[in-house]
Length: 403
Ligand code: NAP
Ligand code: MG
Picture 1: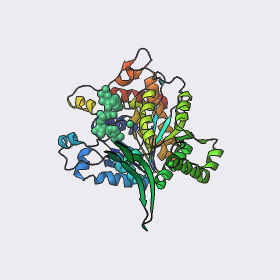
Picture 2 (picture 1 turned 180 degrees about the vertical axis):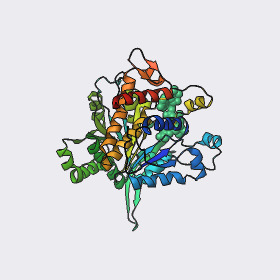
Picture 3 (picture 1 turned 30 degrees about the vertical axis):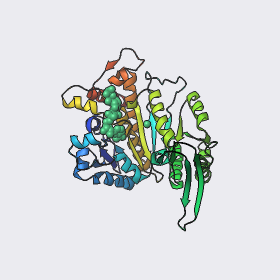
Picture 4 (picture 1 turned 90 degrees about the horizontal axis):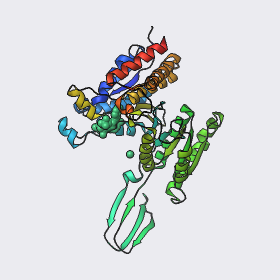
């Protein structure tokens, strides 16, 4: 069989530990035999970040701006233990944080749905994509312990020295206070990313906040979403038969639980943090959660939502067998290849991405899966495969589908 051609390279960001092992196996078994794979390779493994003083992370993000589409392996975010383990000169920042800051994007997470791994919510038939605003609010807040009676105010000093104040509270006793902010520009990017991704994936957008209580802060989010929608997206949405609506966060929860799924749920930073874990767990497994960073400038970075699966890696190093689920990493590749194919007008590459996903899903639905899924599946007669066996089983399914 002749290999499928690519015209523009993908930005390939390699990573750490068990996912680095899976990365190579996926390339060897599922990609290189079928695709004349063109990538510009950046090694974001911790050792190379250390060697390059993290420059490689910055370079990989700049390359994503140049080419438009990246695929990333999970990476270690160093903490004190990792500094010791790897003898680091510095506690390098989270690569995902660095990349997100450069691309200015929003992260969309969606579960991979397979028969036999059923969502805990009976009505959910299609994936729910959660879009989390990743700037500001309580994550960049200033806080103060108030020791006793006194007055707390918000003070804004303009550049010309003019001031505006707002009473927070006249304290009669001890208490606490918090000041948080957001930026119109960041909220605008968030809204644009959501609407753009909705058009790309043909899904409705739901956005929810609490503007009845937060009449200025949350109201600003609501207004910006509506303005951007009316100005830039309403026409495209209407001709694609899609809808956007805003509702209160508590109403959204009720609707989400009663829904069939199949839409994008845009959340403010804190709501997104909490709700993405709820959605991931309710759909079955973290190992089945995909993630894509979409920037308002049209750059895409695909990855798995989970980490480097450190515990499995240590078993692997000891020569023990692992059964690590590669689905979300496979889907990071298929997502990136599909997007590359769409942008470059390569129908064969898009078709390959579809087949890779179908083969992966069908392998699980036929009862062959890794241990994490075997523990929760409703299928009978399941065969538990190790990390490599699962990937080779997907390859066999794919070869059968292609022939
Ligand atoms: P993790 O890698 O997500 O794994 C946590 C646990 O979840 C695993 O021990 C395993 O449970 C289960 N799990 C996750 N992915 C799985 C898969 N594909 N197949 C089977 N089981 C899976 O989180 P972590 O161990 O807390 O973090 C390890 C490293 O990843 C950290 O250094 C962290 O900084 C990094 N991290 C990176 C990213 C990213 O690059 N996007 C995201 C999160 C974390 P069992 O042990 O019970 O089998
Ligand atoms: Mg969380």
